Image 1 (cartoon, rainbow, N blue to C red):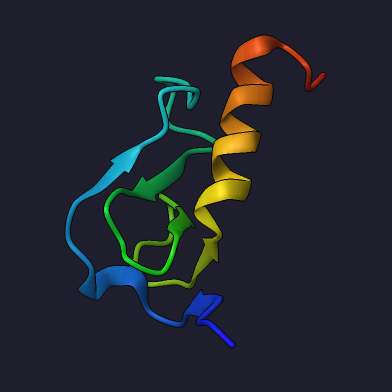
Image 2: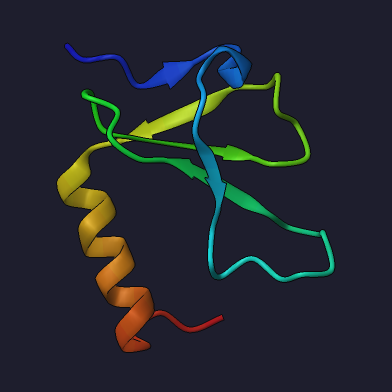
Length: 73
């Protein structure tokens, strides 16, 4: 079984804010590229909080659906 959660994500460097997060500072999602076990995702307002690790293939499908407009708000 692979790791699916990181309890304290602050020890990882290189987080970037999602391009779909607004500039107003609310509801921000951060992702970490090039993590060997998948794509870590965390709430930017809680940098010492947990991160969920999404399998890379599932993350790619999610991003493709967002970009194509297949997901409604």
